[in-house]
Image (cartoon, rainbow, N blue to C red; front, side, top):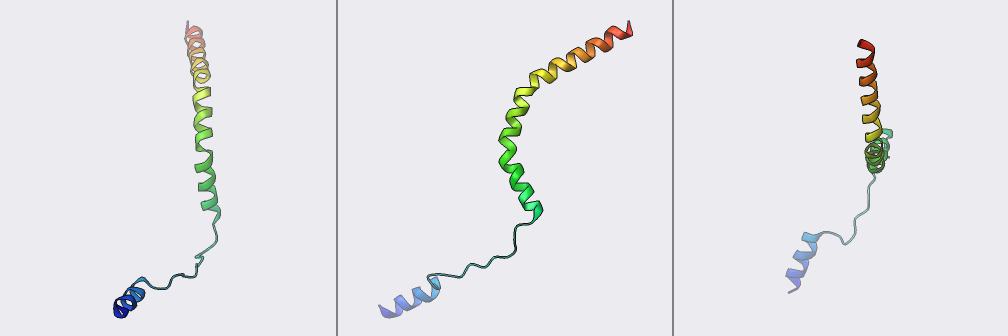
Amino acid sequence: MRVLHTALALEAGPAWAPVVLEKAATRATLGNMMVFLLAPFIGLLYAILLPFVGLGMLAWFATAAAMER
């Protein structure tokens, strides 16, 4: 039984391993995180403003058509 326990302990490795930080977060990484976190709010703003943008474009095209006459 001791041999099996030793084999399992060697296979599993140490119970803890030191954490190694590769590098600090770069500016690009922080920018990507901000876009990820702000994406739902940007989508909500887009959905709220979409009817107003559509009405504005309709008025623009109507004005352009009226000016051609």
